[in-house]
Amino acid sequence: MNRLINLSRALPAPESGITVAYTPIRLPMPGRQPLELRLTAPATGGNLPIVILSHGFGPSNYIPSKDGYAPLAQFWAERGLAVIQPTQASSRVGGLDPDLPNGPFFWRERVDEIRVILDQLAEIERQAPAVTGRLDHDRIAVAGHSFGGFTCGLLLGARLQGEDFTDPRIRAGILLAAPGRGGADLTPESAERFPFFDVDFSGINIPTLVVCGAEDDPHFTPRGPEWHADPFHDAPGADALLTINGVGHGLGGIAGWDARETEAEVPDALEATCRLTLAWLRSTFAIEPTAWTQSKTALEGNAAALAKITMRKK
Image (cartoon, rainbow, N blue to C red; front, side, top):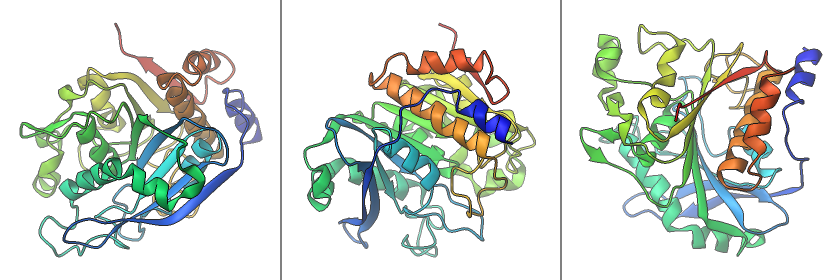
C-alpha cells in the first residue's frame, strides 16, 4: 500500500495551504426552504476559480449532503479553488420531502439549485466575508459524483427529450462515475424507474473531464464499467477520460472514509483521483497550463499502475 501511495505522490500537485470554511450558507428559494451550502476556500489569494460540487443520491443507508466529499473538496480548496457544496433536493437530510411530486430524485430541482447558486454568488460572498471580492465569477466549473454527475451533465449541455439545460456561466465540468446512456442500455426495471437517464450527451460542448473506476459495477445496465464512460464517447466537449485502476464507484473514497458510498477505501486511488482532477482544472482554468500535461507524463512512467488517461482524438 505504501509503495502505491508513493506512486500517487509522483503525480504533480501544489503544496496544501490553509483554508476557511462557512456552513451553513443559506440561499432563499421561492416556495420552499432555503438551499444550504458549504463553502471551502483558500484563506488567502484572489481570483479564485469556483467549483460547485454536486453530491450523489446515495444508497439507502447513506445520506449525502453539503458535508460529504471532504477528501476531494478539501484537497481542491487547499490548492487554490473555492468549492461550493449544496445539500441538494434529493438528500434525505435537508432536502425536499421525497413524497412530493418529482420525488425522491428531484432531478429537475437539483438543476435549479445549481442555477440558484450561480444567481446568488454575491449573496454567498456576503455570508462568507473572508472570501468577499476574492471569487472569480468568470471561472466556474461544476463537478458531480454519480447522480451528481447526471445533474452536472445537464448543466453542461446534455439534453433530455430535446430540452436544453445548458448554463453559459459554467465553463468546465467533471463527471465522476456519472450515469451513461439510458433507454435500451438499461435493464427494463431501471429504464422504468429512471426514464430521465435517457439523455443525449452530444450537446455537451464545454470542456469536460469524465472520470471512471475501472472496476465499477453499475446495477442499472447489463453493460460493465465502460457504461460510465459514455459521456466521453458521445460529448464533443469531453476532451479526456480518466480511468482510475483498482476501484469501483467510490473512486477510492471521494465521498469520505466513513461514507456508505465508499465501497472500498483505497488511499492511493483516492490520492490519484484528487491530484489528477486538480491538474485538469488547473490547466483548464489556465492556473498552471502545463499541469495536465505533466500528469499525463507521470502516468506514462512510474505512476502508470494508478490510472489511465484517454484523450479525444482531434
